[in-house]
Length: 175
Image (cartoon, rainbow, N blue to C red; front, side, top):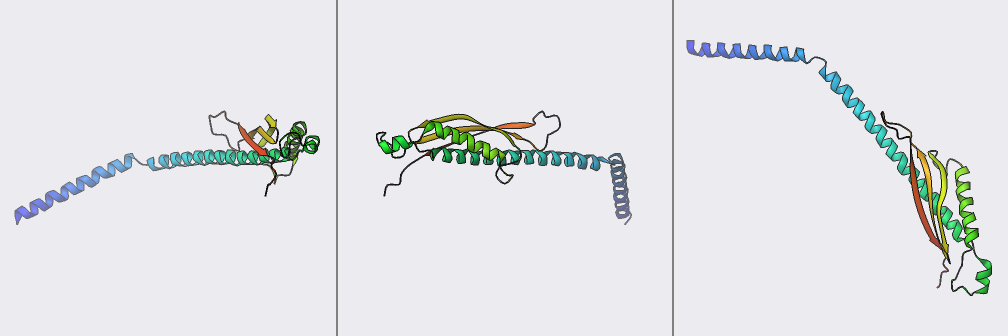
């Protein structure tokens, strides 16, 4: 019985000592959870800013692609009437390339001056980079600058340059 109480007493002393050591550790780490919380909060905010900027770029790119496709389709509608009625080109519906180029520039200008429903407010300086026209085929390349809504700390990135291209062909449906 004395042996049993001695073991129990030694266990109680060890447990008390462990509790005392743990209490000292907790007192030395007081406030460390707030530092971790602030750090994780800053990381979360930075990731949200980055994700917002990436989403803005993706939506602006999609809007530029729509404008480029619209301009290409408008260019394809520029019928070269003289060649069409002569019928000597070997092409069903020939395109007047000089008129097509003017229509592309006009369409991009109208798109830039249009309502906010048509274009994204981030897009600026939309321009025609390349225009290729031959027979009944038109290919255009456009570029624009997209302003980012947020700027990450210690980053000099304010805007990005976007590129889009589209091609269209005028064809007669042969049935």
